Image (cartoon, rainbow, N blue to C red; front, top):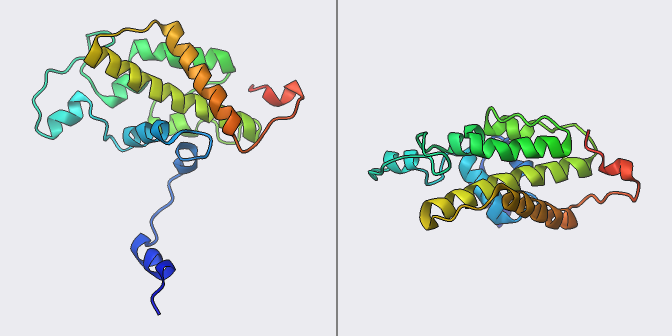
Length: 180
C-alpha cells in the first residue's frame, strides 16, 4: 500500500543534513529574512556577478562605495560600509563575529551562551543580512541612502520582534541576557 509518508521518504531520500539549517529556518525569524540568507548561502541572489553568469550584461559596481565589483561575498562580508554593521553587532554584543564566510558567520555562536542568547544572536545576524540586502536594493534601484543609525535601529527593531517569537524565553534575571 503506497502512503504519502512512503512516497515522501522515497522522493526526499537520504539528503545530507546541513549544519546551518536550524539557524536559518526557525520560528523566530520571518521567512523573508531567512530566504535572503538561504539565497546568499547558495549564491542565488541577483547580484551583478550572478546576473552575468545567467547571460545579462550589466556594468558591475558596488553601490555602497562605487569601487568594487558587485558580488554577494563583497556586499555581505567584505565591503567596508557593511562591515560597519558587523562591527556594530560585535561591539553591541561583546562577541566576535567571523565574517570570513557565510558558514562561519552562521555557525560561530554554536555552543556559546544560553539557548536564548544564541537565538537572539542568530536573529541579529539574519536581520543584518536582510538589512544589507534591503539597503543595497534601495540604493541600487531608488537612489535612497539611509544613514547607518537608521539601519542599526531597523535591525534592533527586527531583533526585538523576533525575540517575542523565540521559543526559549529568558528569566527576569539580567544574567540570562548577558551575551559574553
